[in-house]
Image 1 (cartoon, helix red, strand yellow):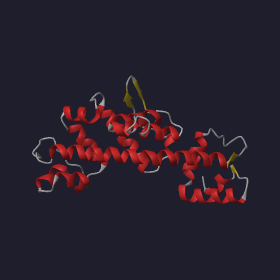
Image 2 (cartoon, rainbow, N blue to C red; image 1 turned 45 degrees about the vertical axis):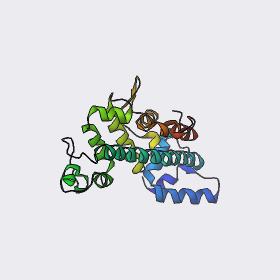
Image 3 (cartoon, one colour; image 1 turned 30 degrees about the horizontal axis):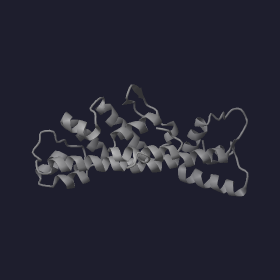
Image 4 (cartoon, rainbow, N blue to C red; image 1 turned 180 degrees about the vertical axis):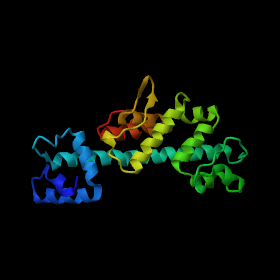
Length: 225
């Protein structure tokens, strides 16, 4: 569907809204607007129109969630690097180091070349870091995340969440990976955010006083975790 074709299904209440619609179709793309309309259960065949204000509201909510998640995903990435570096920087001769596909992700190779563990990890992307964590001893994963139960699936899920956030996918209707939290297992956005929460250091989960962190920020976005 072209931009002009999609605009025929969207009603605006002012010239300003028309300009906003035109702008966001250009910078966000037609496809994401179609996804939002599908999320809102808009029927393209019934001859009616959907208000731009309804679409705009979802766009803003999605962006707000993404902006907050980016902060905590970055915190998790930094935490993983810090834990591995702090524990093994003076004892790098380990059998569990891995090599990713790209030269920057070849942890084992770059360590044998004499680069410091800290610098190697700083240059390693999130997906390779996740794969490296899977190869660490069980005791490390328990120390990092409080638990090793279904940890590989949960690490894969948080990596997929990170990719969706980084690539500006429409999060409210995205097909995430299954993750495990307590006795729950599904691929919903909410459970994936709770999975991120349980992988974070405790202070990031609920803040220093127990009333903040990702829990509070997500509630501000309308997601109760």
